[in-house]
Image 1 (cartoon, rainbow, N blue to C red):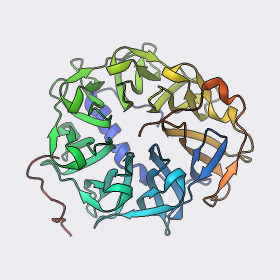
Image 2 (cartoon, rainbow, N blue to C red; image 1 turned 180 degrees about the horizontal axis):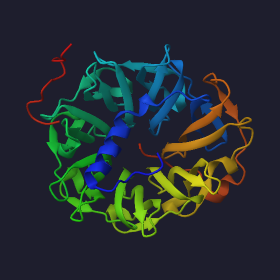
Image 3 (spheres, one colour; image 1 turned 90 degrees about the vertical axis):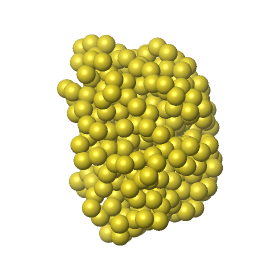
Image 4 (spheres, rainbow, N blue to C red; image 1 turned 60 degrees about the vertical axis):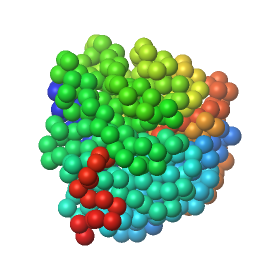
Length: 395
């Protein structure tokens, strides 16, 4: 995704939510896409798949359990999954009675949250118990679509609910273990959507601002209040992750019309441009408690590579420049999250064959230069009287 914002806030939010909700529908590529954990000791752990080809890792916790989604054996349907510690083993979380499922968040207990796509293509948010056991529908908040994107260690989920019209989207937070849903409102009464939540219950996302454009926001603890984070000088911004200090990362328009990754200070105060790897855009997808940021950026030649920064977002380094023996034609295209032990979930493109889920040793030159020993995030897309509760599916 080259840009995140559009000419109007409603279009911005529609694109952001739609992309988050439909990531599994991309056309097949000629080269395989593999998901892996890049470890601080220089080893790469491939996650394998659920029997198909492509796998996307969307979240990692401090035990190295990964949540995401993968093709099943027919290479068409995608199912949510969870792995064991350090990415070992992959369990299909199922779909309840839906067609597709996508996991987008995981906490340290292994509770997973995400989205189920039903046969009528409506979206339902779900949460599991510890270690991915059991899948529960979180309800519908009176809307026709709902997706949960982030989860904290209390089991509070955050996400977006919307009707047939994306203009009606609302950010939400749940109580512990997904019980009860609350509309977080919006910056100016327009659409809003949430993407991540920290252990204090501070929620981040985007909402229509006074300018009529989408702006990144942060709430106070337990989702109380909503503060506009502003931009890097452009018209719009979108927040994607938050750590336990309240540092927020995402993407923002700049004064010259580019799209750049940003980081804020604690509790969302101040916004700093993280720059790029030589191109015109960058996107921050994850942050750990040390303030190390991961994401992806275009290069001067137009290709896209994953990056990592040092603590508090200082410096941006191409992950590919640190890795040896990745294989001819393969490259780390995206970094999707980082945990507090410095384990990074990455997307590797151009893999000539799907690797078996085993660990390959690789050299990471200059690892100490960026202090590669700290944490991650998740980008990684309910209310009273839901239209359908956990035992009321329309199937």
